[in-house]
Length: 427
Image (cartoon, rainbow, N blue to C red; front, side, top):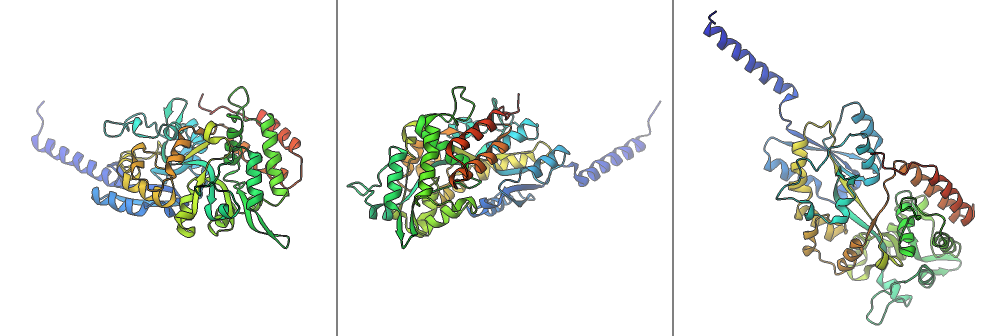
């Protein structure tokens, strides 16, 4: 049977027109990259400029942003569980949040089709990259890193007699010594504290960081003998909470971070706090107001030898995104570039995840910070981390406000952690 050539041509044209129409309905390669980023990132990074540069390098591609709350993980879970997404790239989640996405198979595996000869795993700082590796799979990339330290006001420390002959701030070897430092640096006038010796980030966003980093420095491990269960039974755990309680009772450390997570940072930047336990990046951030020469950073007791807590805010790509290729390009071309990272390193102290970038770091303290990071220890990835984190905040805050004893607090925390799922949820 012979075919009519005219009919064949007509049918071919119809198919071609249908394909073009389907493309306009959204089945063609996407030309928009939707980025969901934690709101605070816009104040620390040039995200808008990065988007403009990317669009210029990729004509026709539009980059849009959605600013979200720091802990807005439930929205993603709800969308992705339904096979929907309002974003193609997520910036800012902690490892404890991303592991929840990975356990439910909602985010892509970067081991497949991301690393190449131009960008290899050994280009990253190992400790930060490893925090996005869950059970042997790279589900998250690091956007920035942090390490727990003590940020110091050099002028106030000098006035308190807490510098050496060369003018360097002395490093407390133990928590007993740090207590004495706080005592000397606190100024009380007419029964009112006018200068705080030591502010500790005990708010909802830092309680776990502060407890675990302090414990790590004291005993060389934050865990019990099983190397999985956070320690609430050792003599060091009891000693730590006892010293924290004394610091509050004696007026050397305030509890203002309970209600205002930024209180410690704000008061340090205002020149009212001599020492502040928080992320090391706070030292550079405060330099804009206090003067770079008047601020520095020192290790928490024992962390220069035993390691401190390191953590990172990362990058994930949802599996349901149709713009995964654009998202990967944006990561490589913008987010991990030297210019994008070093602006924040030198202005805000946020640590680049790329090892080679630090040749451009300006402040001399970076040598100490990087040495601390090399010995850094990541916090555990628990399926029930959210429950643990909330309980830790509540129990320690009750302890520090004298609503319960150190022994009661540790007992409650031990019972809580014994009841939780300490697996990642991936196996």
